[in-house]
Length: 402
Image 1 (tube, rainbow, N blue to C red):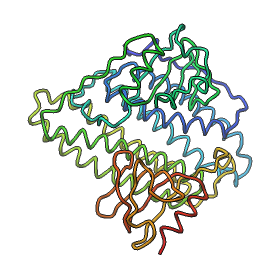
Image 2 (tube, rainbow, N blue to C red; image 1 turned 120 degrees about the horizontal axis):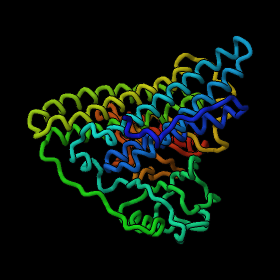
Image 3 (tube, one colour; image 1 turned 45 degrees about the vertical axis):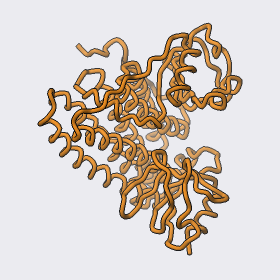
Image 4 (cartoon, rainbow, N blue to C red; image 1 turned 60 degrees about the horizontal axis):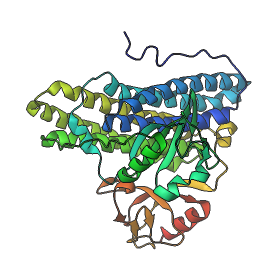
């Protein structure tokens, strides 16, 4: 018997006129949350988070059907079909990401086997993601996020809410928290414990961490976490390449996919070496399943960018999916001797005016550096992936050139 039967059930769906733009945006947000939730569930050995992944995966299945129905209704002539084909590819790739995230969650729920050392893959500086049910008498119940001002007061963010079967992704200042809501919180360990207890009325129990005893196993786990971070970045860049019609960003998705493939090869070697010294090699099966699903996510990112690689005009429905915002993701090559050569990056921002949030650097002699994990200094030859305003992007492009 399926252990999830009765908890996660298929829902029927009929065609109804919906905004394709809204469905695509929700699919993108859902995919990104699924990746985050599934890995957090495994790294924290948290079955409640894993079950939320399966609920969200079911939601994605419905979104995929709605998107396909609406896109089929929109194709009225051959030119429409040509422009909509890549959009159908985005829908299919997003569903692949959803399925891969579900497979990651099932590694935990189906007890495929994971070494306890997985928990050591959580560096102290990395934020924690937890799930809690809002108590009816909580001090946060029936108040808006703007009124509570959690992020300013504690640094803890509410990244999503589930109210029955309804999901509220990216809740904004006007979102009202209600008793019975399932809240997904992200923040540092000390702060999140305080907020969790105020929200749920229950004590917060931090996961216990034990260092791995096998060096090759530690390397394998570190490699999986790096693969996860690069795959997550690849998905973000893939969507951005489509939304901003950027061949440069699509090319970086390819570069990331090549790096993930190389990491998978190293991971396999270290896992096989670790199996020789492990007391229970069978428990390493889960690591192999994680690595396989992570590569699927990376491959799906390439599929999202397919239309850009084939130089197919972006359909207006995709252009509409870009939120009305001045923020862009951009790729900047730093020339040696330019104004940006030698500039330090502290907490993700170069010491320049104007500045941008640096997500990652591709360095010829070092590969990918994820700035969330490290402060560094910009060098000539670096390829920068950064977020910021269009005005800041123009300034950075100028500063990066000699």
